[in-house]
Length: 450
Image (cartoon, rainbow, N blue to C red; front, side, top):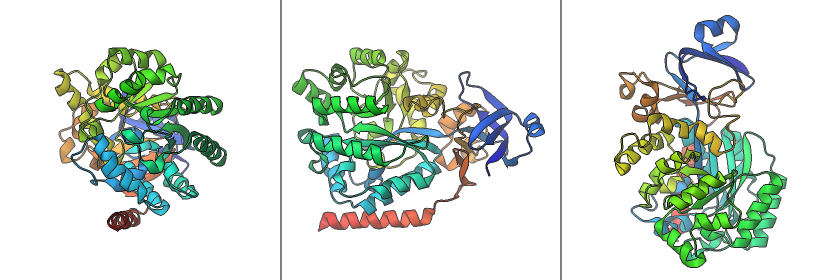
């Protein structure tokens, strides 16, 4: 249906006033939100097909600002290791033994998991893409056909083997330049599929490659996303090699700016936070992955104090073990409360903003998604609060942040299209995807043991 009304919902708008509308309704026409108000008033004006929210929460879809879809098949391959050992025990063996068919199955599984947990937009940071020979049409088609809104981070690296970059994915700078140009000319971009540049990490790129990244981004009007200062060891390596941290080095090359999303930023001091703020560089916070790999805790409250835009993310499933943004939402404020010894270090409202409208700002799309407002795309989820974990119900935002889980997600609408209804996927065959993914994983294990 092209035009419909969602009725009888508790609407968490996430607009600039953080308005909540009880017994609210949302009108969608051809994928766009055209009206919002009280149910009784809205249904008097619009004779469209109705979706009854049944008194549940209606809110913007969650925005995952950093994940690696190729890692979906790497869940639990490496446990109880730090990042450097994880690269050697998980990242490199996984990519080396993965075919393009496996990659497609990994992508489909990751998107399936994302949608079922209420995520409507992802930044898929695919920095292993150059390790795969041949056409990646099937990968792009799998993303396009899934119905999820995606920013595809075209990844690459031309150095860094001594700091964890897998040899199979390290290519020379000229090869990377040609591949990027070819990729940009081949695949059409729109608001459902955008392309960003995604150098693997500052330590995995020569100065020449970082400057090439900036030049191409400026030429094509692209965003850039890059790992920075993820671990203490990486920060120390950069200082030893270049005389400055990854953040400082990236700033000196001219890479940082308002179109850049830095990922992790765990080991940053006050001076580096000031650099990020000065450059208006955005930050993707990946708390569960940082905990899983014992990388540390990013000083997000200090960044927010400096008005740095921060989005939330799962990271790849191989360093998190799922794609569940509800897990990230719950962990984020709890982690910072205990680390900083301050119950208000990050509030429930701040957390939900990071998962929605600030996430949209991180992806340079806050004029189009991230809140329920007139003129924006209808990326909407309905969260069932009539469950044991959300009963009794009192505060809508606190219920989402501290009580709800992905199991509460009932309906997912992306770009005005229903992709999950009553917990049932509409155009994705869940059983087939799971079966194919498990088979691919077994094939990878067989190759590892061969």
